[in-house]
Length: 306
Image (cartoon, rainbow, N blue to C red; front, side):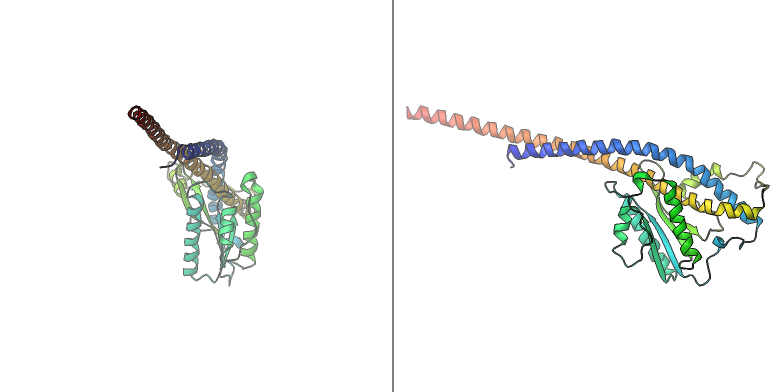
């Protein structure tokens, strides 16, 4: 059995760990509130741009914009993987990396000759830089001061390679924020802009953003200026807001996952402290009992000698 000093040191060590995990939980909870506000403000706008773009596409020829179809002879694929910059958030990073690896396997199975990765977040960058797939850009450490300019730069990199024919398909892999406990692992097509409306589980639940009028007819928009002029303006904005939404979704999901992980770690530390305290009391009791036996044995020996 460990001596009293060793047990006491372990209790102090676990107590210090508990204080750290509790503080990290509180920090994550504060960041989560801010992240939730940002994603809840962004979702309706991103959804509406998507809906308006669909109406514009219906007014024009399917080849009206170069980003609606993949360039000829483009056989590569770009996968944008959004992870966190830090760990200590449960299976958040490993889950999205696993989903990205699944998307990579499916891309090769579909006949992709060249596959490129654009990793947003340090965890994904470090993981995939060890593989044979080329990395596009460096987006590590962006979540401490996440801004819309990051989404703009990602879209610029994706569109540049798409227009040059380096890749003919772009997908975004990220964790979608559902609630504090649950994240949805999403593989969302970005380029070419899909004909059919892509919906995540949260989009399906928030169906009020896509409901038709009560008469069941689609809204008849009047476009001013021309649909083509609006299309040229809305397509870049649409892409940027889809990436921006994915970054915000991932950031909110990360903070929720970290808050839950730190809460579980704090509870585990408390249970460990209780077990160690019980072990400490038992060891102390045994030590006292042994001392009493030694005293009694010594007193008996003195009586016999006298």
